[in-house]
Amino acid sequence: MEYFTTTSKASRRAVDCVIVGIYERGKLGAAAADIDAASEGIIKQHIKSGDVSGTLGRCFVLTGVTGVKASRIAVIGLGKVSSFGITQYRKALAAALQAISQSKSHQILNCLTLEQTDRAGIYYRARHTAQSVGDALYRFTEMKSGRKTPGMPLKKVGIAIAKRSDAAKAMRGAEHGAAIVSGMSLAKDLGNLPPNVCTPSHVARTAQKLARQYKNLQTRVLNETEMKRLGMHSLLSVTAGTKEPAKLIVMQYKGKAGQKPVVLVGKGVTFDSGGISLKPGPGMDEMKFDMCGAASVIGTIAAIAKLKLPINVNVVVPAVENLPSGKATKPGDIVKSMSGKTIEILNTDAEGRLILCDALTYSRRFKPDAIIDVATLTGACVIALGHHRTAVMSNDDGLSGNIVAAGISSDDRGWPMPLGEEWAAQLKSNFADFANVGGRDGGTITAGCFLGKFTDGMKWAHLDIAGTAWKSGKLKGATGRPVPMLTEFLLARCGVLP
Image (tube, rainbow, N blue to C red):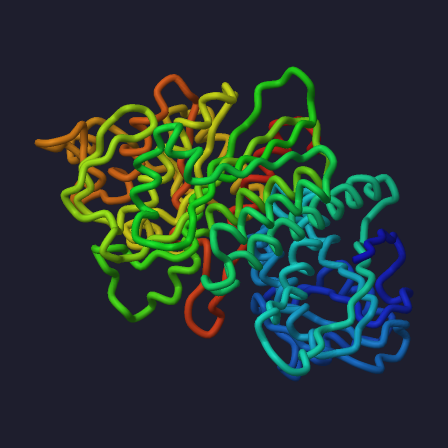
């Protein structure tokens, strides 16, 4: 996708479509006012007739407008002036793109960037333009046979700016947004692939392919023999019931010499049946998305490598299948983790923490400046936060605050949740150092407390993305979250944000 900036009036650009906005109570946005003036009041006429409304997300496409050079004008509702922020901006732009998605628009001009949003300057408006375009154009058709339905043939996107001095920030925003889109698309593709294709070996091959694509990225894949030698018996207990071999994928991006890395650990359960603690049948197909933590950290490091950021980032992905068989781990079994701590497995469906704990211990060798694990870990997180926000838990308030702030800026929001001894006490076991579950009460927090037992001395955060990693129903598919949040966190950390 090619991006460009322009200070030209919306009515003067000869593009296939111009996107302009209006607010509630008939207030015209900056570009809509220009279009209305050039066309002798056509927008106000349609407001009076009821065709055009300021209701957020409502779109009406005008064609053949006299006095305007664009072939189409997408007039999108922006809601209340006082409430218009980056979330409303993204919703409005997404609705406009959806409205013109069936057209043959090759070049569009987004004039919503001229509207003022709370705490979001032209850099973020341009970045979210690129992300919204990427979301609108994304299609997963790899597994479909026959002729593919063509999408909108969009090639160029214009970003309207108020003054020429905004051009550099806008183009940087578009560049960063395009990189985030590429990382999100990779994460979506991995999540959307069926589990008979996206096996642990497939995830490993994807990581190796990225290392060949980017010279500053290295990938190493450890097999089960190597993991056994390291003492990763907790991780290997999860994969005992399947024929698919587990993989430990280690990726290293080196962008700044002598700097301690940020380590991202992603849960990579490519299919989770629950093991002997078998899940209910309805909806079990969605357990192919249980590797979205892995997909998101791989997508994030791909975005970082694409941007060549001055930071060191490592990714560690324990990739496994969790299936029942005569060799599968049983409730009541006790395993020894790589750290030496023993775990009583009361529920084999609480498997994500069993692979993550060994991955966290392995990550100590990198002496990380900060370590963040990302996992579709608990159904309890969906009960607590719905499908709107990622749960953020940490042993460091500063790290947690930076992650939450990154979520706000990227509009990929998180919500801080507590950790503490009162929850950790629920993990007590009569037979091992602790159990892998602590009952239903506070399930998201007790899962975080379990992982926290393996992070002593490290600045660590845990992101539970069980509610945000994919959508169900008619729109079923991976979302690519939290690639925007993680990328924003790393952009801020290496000081390249404007």
